[in-house]
Image (tube, rainbow, N blue to C red; front, top):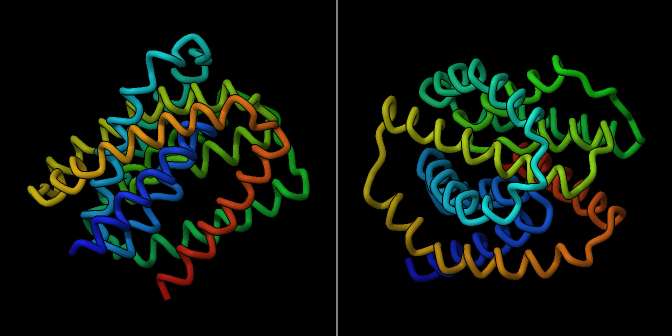
Length: 239
């Protein structure tokens, strides 16, 4: 029990450092490791609760950097995905979903490494929001489709970080409400989340320091490394 708590605190701290410095790392790093400690639905809800706290804590400082038109498109696109995702959360065996997501992440990451590019459009904004919404209610990981899309259109890292954080505040809150309404929750989930809050805020502080000197090249290297690790991990642990 004590070992699990220590691992939980370490995971949350590292994931929040990445989230604060890059805008996407918390769920992509945190959720796969939380799957190692807890049952799938418990891990997903811990991740979502902590992500909401993180977004609320950070939103005031980054609100002026948000691409508001893009944010509206992502939110509009997410509605259909949120509904589809909650049915996946309730009825699809989690290992099948993890394998599918892992394969998609690895394939699309290879496209990015080989400098695949895509022109941004409003339809693609909506699609990215829809897929992200589906992954949020189903496995609590909205980041991969946004990261892949924004990297493909070569979006500035500051805009990426700020817009995704604002979007996460909406999509995580909507997902948590839907998961509790359809699947319930329990006191242990909220206890684990509460225990992790100091580590979350420590990670935010360290992540802000890291963001001051991280270059676009290092940002991309971190992006590709995290995506490859996540894809492989999701596949291997689901076999």
